[in-house]
Image (cartoon, rainbow over all chains, first blue to last red):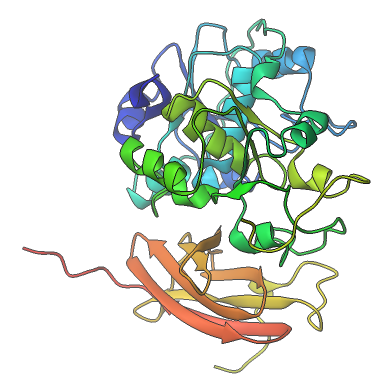
Length: 279
Length: 105
């Protein structure tokens, strides 16, 4: 898979707004960002209420996903272009979830909302009201999703890539620094994990670094390209960003996102935890 | 500048300033607040830690730990940065001035 199969530029996006068969979808960490202005014609998906089950602690199931995409006017053959704020964290999370349910015709806007805004491109507050479709999803592809037991089994056996900041990895803090530090679970990281913060894969403007820079970044940090890989963070969104890098841009075939991530792992009874800077 | 607390930076309910370190401030260009600027919090080694967008009044806020931090702002009005060293809980205010780099002509 090449970069052009995964990413579109802001230039490309601007030229393709309103094109039949292309649906722009905004997924923001700040779920109110869309309301203040978004790409003309883009629809909004809320990661908190639409990509996750409202009751169980899980992503939506296949039927819920079908209902969601149908309601958003997305057809099975449409090209979906995802973008969002905060360096595409939650757009990448949506990208991973769309891929999980078999929507292959999907791309990320490189740089996301930040690059679009820094470019000074048009935003609108007109809310898109697309006609509903009848979307059919595939069964969840569990080859890209890791669960807790296989994460424990992966200790010293697979690449465990912890993409949180160094202070979260070492156990100094429990959440990213723009969020209140209210979590009560244990700090630290999964033993044998390597710490490659997601941010090292992105430029300051939110675009992904070049393939050469990315390959060097992971190689220098001890990533073993002969092993299968599980990426995790705190709630699975930053590790989706890294999943896009490893699985989609660098083309490693066996890469899973552990969306339970540290909020689950750091609350489990009896699992091993390591503190400090790691190895 | 002294005055009444800015309501735009009202802290989330339950924030305990005797326990939490809060870095807050404003991005300005030529003395005017810059809304919609991207503010990146970098740790003492220059490592990215978090990023937020400034409010309509140009304000930003982070929850941090003791140490030296750099606040780097990107905006349509240019980029800039400021640093701060904090050693304990409380509210720490920082202003970040941005300016357009002088372009080669």
